[in-house]
Image (cartoon, rainbow, N blue to C red; front, side):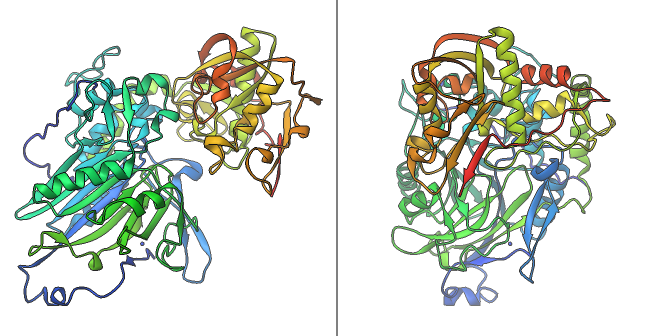
Length: 594
């Protein structure tokens, strides 16, 4: 399918501060406004605007492998099946086909388009993904937490262009930056108190105007390295959106969409589940529900993300009226198609006419040639590094479950690296959010089944965190394990992946810290001695107290080792071969009681 014609003119957006649904259609309640039924006879008043959206692409230009490249689809008979999905060559085709026949169409995203990316994009500081998003004709996006992985200055470079300050230019043409604005209304420069990027943007076509406000989750500093958010403050999502909704209204913009990099958890894992079947707002839980209930009724729809879930739900706004809240899973596997009916008489969206559905980015459509060319060009640059074998596996090592085989393997690798640095190292703990993918046995390229390439390892661990050693008392170690299910992690537990030898029981029938059964904690079969000292290996993100583990920031005797991917690579190389591949860990170190 030929590439869609590019928009004319280069759009530039400067920083405001230097720190710089078978898809089931969910319809809002009630009937379409009476006059709107006459729109064929009175086309002047109502105008349907197509809003296409996606979120959490994370630089997945090539089709994701394993479970990361599939979605679950509910069938008419009530059963579910999985469908292969994703890949920017297919996403481009789907979006271009969706736009056909819709002269009023705008494409928006909900953040985390870059960061934690596979090697094809991550190796080049996500320049390939920004280039792809430009070709996708993305109009606007909010920032996500991962847009801050390399700090505000790097985010400014992604917006405005220029060569990387350390690695320079990768191509002779240089890097031109994003054609679309990144919105960061609730991310302020601590010195100036102003947003580090534009807080809002207005889409215009003839006399139709729709404002977009972009925010990321207020809790971003707790899930990003300290260096990435240095000098920045993150404000309440709903309060910020409400503030800028008033600004837009004062400018005469009555139709408003919020792009929010925070999300929820639907009652079903199927992307086409009828989220409103139990009633408006009852088919979804999580942080986005409270945010949606507090965002001013002036906002007409919420495009969300962060949780990597798929949903098309309505949640009542503060006035009690249902309002659309959507999320398109992650990795480019879905896109959302929402119809916003614009009332020229009021300048607002006829909310009772809003309808929305998630659609699968299937791989049975023609690949977009311009995206194939883009992937080929960057793969040529990445191949010498990415195709290098670093280990062999005897089967899929999955990244799923409370305790995952992939998480255990990484913890074992960090324990081994820790013992190279200091033989006294007792154990290792790995945060689940840092495990971005599993390893698949089937060959992805020409390397052969069971071969793990550097590119595959990079996809698993793309953050370049270091492996850090710290000393903790046994009492502190127990407290760390309890912080998995208490404090900041009480509502949404973050279960650290343990290295071999560390075992305990996680009793989910209990509440809070009691879910970690203290008397069950063993290291190599022996109970933890509260007064003894244990040398613990973690990544630098955890060692700074990230992910709601403040006790991990209280260690002593710090020693910084190699980066985490190097530790994994060395472990795989030392413990596997073509004739003796490493077997997937059994993931039996944590006994879960439910």
